[in-house]
Length: 153
Image (tube, rainbow, N blue to C red; front, side):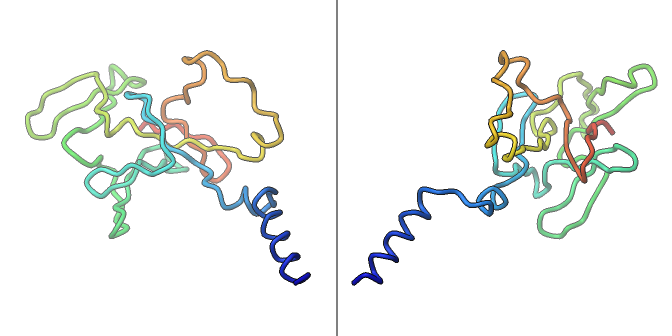
């Protein structure tokens, strides 16, 4: 019976104590929609394509098909993000079929990857939450291979 007491004690301790491995198993990025202000740990997809990645060399966004692994520079769906000569910092959007243009970003193109540092949070170093507008991740902010990139194409 002492052996079973040991096992039960070990199981209870494992439930109430965190090991260094616990933080490694957690996701390190979450997804934020700059239009709807929604965030989620589950990667959203659209027509089978993941949230855009950012090319480390060019800063351009690209998409990867979740099943085939195929990558493309062209955004999935009906809307295309365009940076014009007159508006190099602000994109506009063109509907591929109707040729309608708008300055309003389609919701499905507004998803961005955001790095989350569990270690910083657990150490208590994370700043107190700022006002709602200040705590929103910068649009297109994504951490990949140790550097921050913009999601502009």
